[in-house]
Length: 391
Image 1 (cartoon, rainbow, N blue to C red):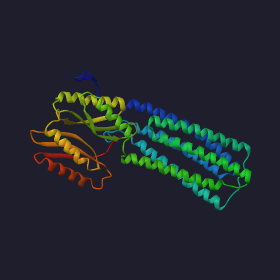
Image 2 (tube, rainbow, N blue to C red):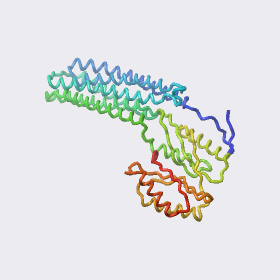
Image 3 (cartoon, rainbow, N blue to C red):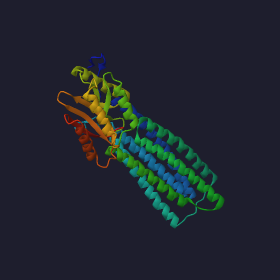
């Protein structure tokens, strides 16, 4: 049931998972994958027939590559279905990361196809066999190139739109296949014109390109599972959205956890006036959560509070100026935030954000605190060492 906050904004419970959006996304991924399966199956059949008829290893390898593409689409469908399973007690954050595991499976399939093709090409280089081409075969290969370009652009664009790494990988692979098939066509024309056979060598090059593509896809998927840096455009957008909420004077310490495509959750600190009431803070934090979810589809489950001095005068201003002067001498410092001076108990709080490239972050941190403490011995400094987790 909806509640009314102090600003008159209707608040509803944030969903634990983007179920409706995920359902629409899943339908798009499945439909696109089915199109890929059908197209690749037809292309594989045509290329296999041509490769056998012309005795061309390069065209046969292209046919095998189309089959792996079709199988990859099947894996994508299965992974997408599993990833959209409802959260349970054992997996309270859902099953979205299965999509990253799906991408890993696809990368292994691609690498296996590449290694197999490379071994076959080396065999043909050692024991060459003469290929034979006719006009019909070359025309069909040319048509296959065109189909792959259209299919690749379509699948990749859909993948980028719905944030599906598997579809993006499939689309990229299809575009690469188009280039490789075009190269095969060129090799055939060279053979017809000069009698120089390049098929086996071209097959080896194709194999290496396929292997590299598989490695790149694997590296990207592993990086996301490990926990890579979130896109700077997204984090900047979220912070701007938070700062647009009435009563918020700054957004810091944004941490986002990736539980699968379009399944981001996280926490953030906001800076507010020191004299706002608990009732007002409650309304502000709920407004922040709702606005971030509505505009970015990100669930902010925790909103921490930094208090801000209403009047930066006297000791407050002097301490801040001295802090700015000290950190200006340390290039490792990226930001100081959460600054607050409690003059009654003589305590200063702030967070110090240091670059990951700093050789010894703890030593730099201790040095800065020591320098500031020497300037204001009557105050006790509580400084939190932060890292630039998000831009």
